[in-house]
Length: 245
Image (cartoon, rainbow, N blue to C red; front, side, top):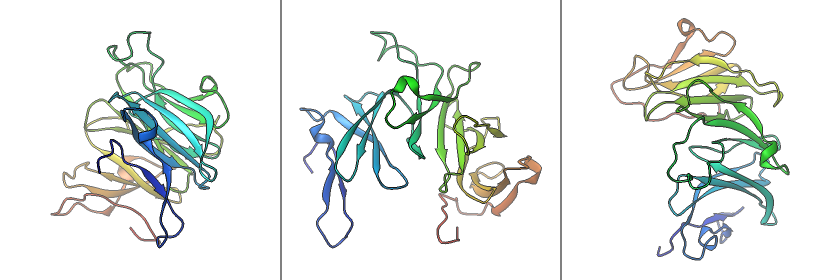
């Protein structure tokens, strides 16, 4: 409608009127703070959301306790080109080091990093999950499979093509990434996992797209399997539900 920002609602019954969960229009007097992304914890207890002010690419992550609409003290700043991926009592996100004063909007961003933030702690205590000291202009995006057993790390140098690494999640301090693809010639997106088999949508040797299965324990490319081969029509997207693709 005529509001500057869309409002986020919540309901437990589609036949009842929904309640306001988060109204970004109330975050600033002039409506210039926009909701960038949202992520709800697996237990449904918390909403983590990022906001952008005045059209900036810089985001700031805040956390709300959903039941009481209570804002927590957690604040994560200097976030950019990032998702919010919950795992246990915290989430993974991507950020840069804080820029020098005056360079926030004009300085070049270098050395994108992936962190883990545990609820109730200060950002300075966040755990560094991944960084690439040799390639300052690469971006890194981390996300999880549906069952939260694998952490996916996607790296990019431009608007197309990405590298792909995957780690099995057991201990936040013992994350070891297994390289699936190091180059940037093709697109690789993890759809989900079936046990230790990782389903990956890719345009590798398939301009129209295909779905492949990669064994996490033996990820050599010659062992990759076609699940949905390339066809005449473009494969736009895939998902898993009820034991079906």
